[in-house]
Image (cartoon, rainbow, N blue to C red; front, side, top):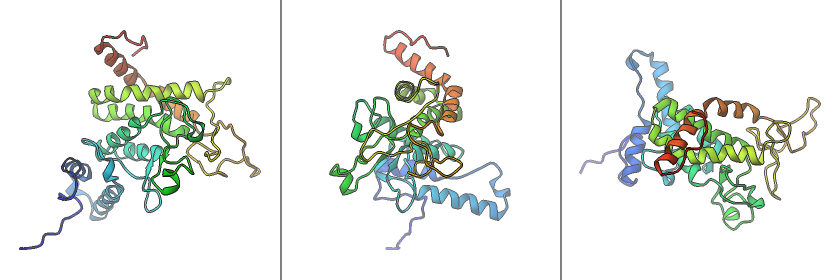
Amino acid sequence: MTEQKLGRDEFDPLAPAVGARSFCSSAGFSVPHGDDMTAKVHKVLNRAREDLADLRLYDLDSPDGVALAAGIPTYQEIFGRDMQAAGWQAMMLSPNFLRGSIEVVRQRIATGFNDWRDMRPGAVLHESHTDPLSELNFTPKSLYYGAATSAFLLPICVSEFWHWTGDLEMVRIYAEQAMMAIEWADKYSLDETGFYRYQTHSEQGIKNQGWKDSSDAIVYPDGSQVDTPSRHGVAGDECVVCAGIQPIRAARRDASAGQGHHGSGEPF
């Protein structure tokens, strides 16, 4: 029997059938007149495709969806903001990355209160780890929600998914959780000045919950640390949300009407 070696984009008989088919289609790369590109450009684009495919979290496959890890080797877990941002950036390649990322975070959106996990209703997952300390609850990171950027990214990504694909049926599926994230921001993050701020409630929570989330990331010009609650880094995210929210509201209204409920009354 002749041994056959599988390339990165070929079918893996050990992988779930749906996941394998999804991965093959997601990892494909083609552009109009691609053969006309210089060899160097073609090589760079294909290497970028292969690197992105290497971030696949196989156990989080969904129908036509591929979820991406935040990095290799130390970030091969769920990071809500990173997988959403990567999926959004990869939309020109395939919608499957963003579809898979949205599916992961929407299934884990917060529905209750838990200070240990910085959880409030509507909060979007920041990170989920499966190491022993997390699983045994010595740290809150088996399900930790302390990040403003994850919540703002969900409605942005749902809106972008609609703009790239025109698939209103999928947006209807995602609309409820996207609006929950917006409502979380308005109820638990918006302050009396009209700015959004964040502050951890957990003993082991993240101090800086914008995109720059290291403990010493936010400083004044003289180098001193900015105290929390901070307004840094999320106002721009909210502007993007407001600019793209109309299709989400319309999808949510249509979904409610289809279930026999009155519409939300929100403008299209």
